[in-house]
Length: 219
Image (cartoon, rainbow, N blue to C red; front, top):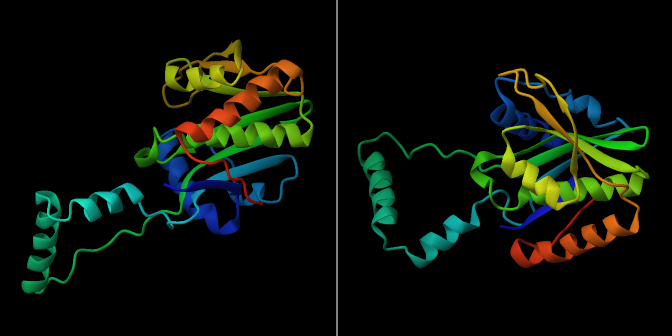
């Protein structure tokens, strides 16, 4: 699965809104993405399928190697039956082009990650980590001193990822999440231009492609 990062574009808005609703409903606390397109104090990144147009390459591999598998044959039979009885072929859902997105606001010396979301079907593929890398790069380029964010107190998976990238717990926001009044952990990096952070970040950037994919960030 070839995934790259780029800045949010107007043609991405519908898919980004879909991902936001999937990830945060019924909370629904997102910004107006259209307004953010021209906000010089924020940056929104999308993780997009750079070569496959959203097609799941794992599925392609399965069917090409196991084209005579029972599941594949059953799928073909179902399609043929629909044609024979005159119902036409089953409808095809368009494959997504955007796998996830991240928003960061630049406030004073801070780069504040406001939200990060990945389509449910693509979670566990390193996409959230790729978006996090992109946000730290953006903060370094902007000249921010630290990067900060909130995470649910119950979301230990996210907290471990952030800790891996040098974020530390700096406080609690009581009742932060509207859907269930769950508290949020405030997590903040050490100064991102310092030598220790740069060494950590560069090392993690170097290791990321070994597990997932090359890091590609387009304009």
